Image 1 (spheres, rainbow, N blue to C red):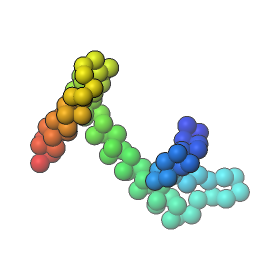
Image 2: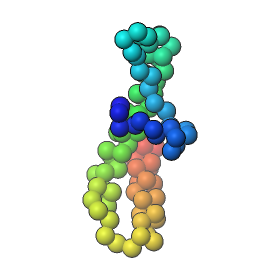
Image 3: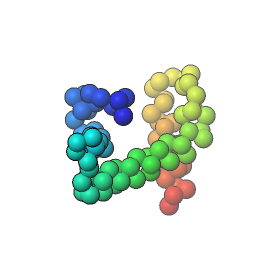
Image 4: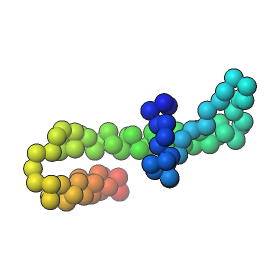
Length: 84
């Protein structure tokens, strides 16, 4: 994506999929790595979607910032409890 250009200078651990060009197609190993990365991203997006059913995470937070971390941890604990 063009939205991720330059992200690796800011975040060294970021992973981007390999892209093909007209002259250089992707190898099977590159395709496999892209598929693996894609499956990780889909899993993360599903978790984010599940957490956003809580209004505190889907809308603007209007309470004290000091308590936001605690509340996010509690919501994450509820989500993890449902998984287990």
